[in-house]
Length: 332
Ligand code: 8YV
Image 1: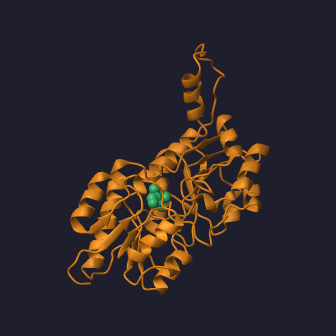
Image 2 (image 1 turned 180 degrees about the vertical axis):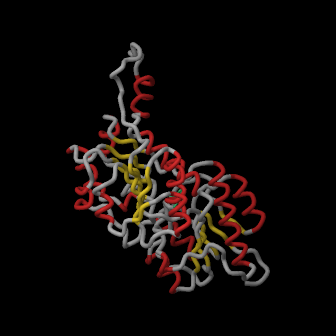
Image 3 (image 1 turned 180 degrees about the horizontal axis):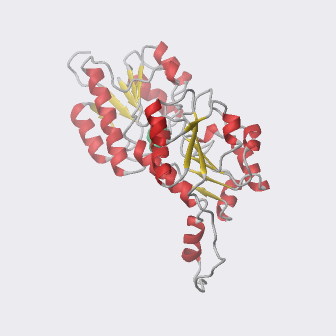
């Protein structure tokens, strides 16, 4: 690749220390206004760049990949999930794709626990009462009652890094851990978590009090929680999703919540982000669901470490080394 610095195009505004280091190391085009790029702007970027640094808000689909210039050799995603990138098409065109695993695991697991507590303990509802009115006349034995989570059953869908981190926290909160995964985790982790493996997702769903979605969004997990599967849940159950909105059939979960087939939901992600269904907003106002604007990894620490991972991946590629966080097509 010669000695000249590669042209790295970053699609969104990143934390300042990350941007500064990127400017030192590469010929870097930043997006200081943080305006999401249009598909036409993305095409222009892939035509010119050696490296593209997109985020979850950019759709790097097969048409964008097909229009990439010969120079584009690396898509270093700022984020863990790569469902926004046509990894197969990129790989076929000898463009490597990398992501930023590990560094956002603990923060995303914390946010999952926050939702797991917020829904049954009516956290947002309670806070809103004080924020919006001064009509609180004092404590009452039967007012604002929620439900206990200690002693309940948690079913984790996807026992990877984040799922396991959720399980560790949840165990400390007195929940019993159940999980569905492509295969069981190693025996020592299962023992540590006292976890029960379900190879049948349907069977697990029918028996749980809380479901946490922690698997990646792939063609195989799109609408994994389909209308039929949501029907299997107990009416007292609630769902927490900090993974990807597309994993749950959003219209079906809204129907289930509205009809009382499902007790509640804590959602950090949505099927058509940034759009949030008006019916979900209404359910949030009524206190049945807690909704957040995709904040799972939104800590200064996570976002800086994600940027550092992006830089390490680009540097490794520049130096001709194996990129540490390569995403292979068959892992999608
Ligand atoms: C990030 C995420 O904010 O990394 C992921 O997969 O969902 C988020 O935590 C986002 O992806 C940044 O691109």
